[in-house]
Length: 465
Image 1 (cartoon, one colour):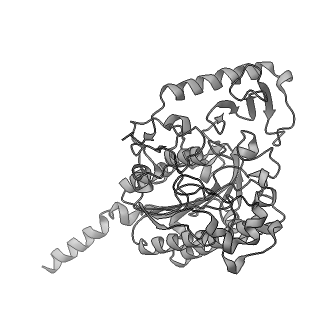
Image 2 (image 1 turned 90 degrees about the horizontal axis):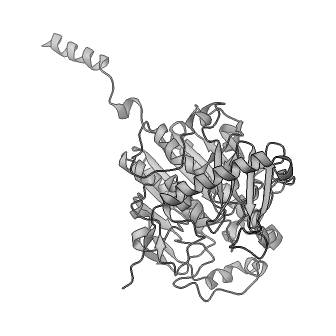
Image 3 (image 1 turned 135 degrees about the horizontal axis):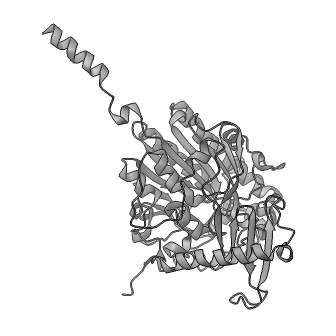
């Protein structure tokens, strides 16, 4: 009997451990700021905004300097991140959704949350959704176990977007304790409105509280937290304990509050000994809303901002932090996009994506861990209304913009060619010097757009009664 027990014990040592025990699945947290510019973090060159916690992420992780979003506005950008597709491929390309919109992201689309949920992950979304407020289009229909947040932008009113305050941003900031009630913006828990109007001063902190609580409760299983902050989209708000009454400091105050909340979340990951097995990605949905001046951000060295296909509209700050495989304090200048996150996450979990729905994302995991070239060599630029406007291929970027006053016509377009390796600010139009490159990029741009349009899938639409 004793010999038999010894033999069983010896075999137990020799046999491989179960997959989950030997190689636990990594956790994922995606923090998605709203309208934060390329130049709004200390680690991306800001000399006025203090972001020590996000800067620490950069010191311990990898900073991506050529990271692109698929649209310069909210809704299509978010659709691209979650589905790995150009917004036009999933029918979410025509600007943003409003409280009266009758469509949203189709629940048949395959999202990051769908993929990880299928692998046994706990999944949660805390923050701005903006992919449809109808029950069929909310986070729980798109792979998330739970949701708390504002279903669209925080400058939108339930139920029809009417009755919004006609006050300047400075006036709203000076009187934020009373101004917060002037917006009839809802807070939802799963599919129910739980606060109307939501106290927008509290949302950044409350989203973080929810994320920390969710992570703590799911410490013994893999988790995915999607944390799309409402801020710094206007109107700007912060809790009273960090409020600076000077409207000239409004944007700075909001970004520094977000940084503090990032610090709280990161501390919790460290305290729970989860930092060695959790990837955290910090980025923004598009560039800064420059027209709001001290309530908007900075694109740093980039041209223009939100709503444009110039670099300031679509190149955003990105930091990826995680297990020791990511070389600390490194910078990657390779072309990477939010669409690449879905296939990269699949690679990091040693899993495969379904083949039914074509996507545009590429697995950039090797670029995350080493100096390997990104598999992405080109990127299509679509306008905020979903019109094809350009193509980047390597260092070359072609833009074909409608002439002024002819927004729906390309009869007299403005054609621009930039070499981004030499001219990140897009100041020198090289069209006349390189007609061959212009012709090649124009042809390829049209080929890619034709394929996407031909194989585009419909969004979910509300049926008429």
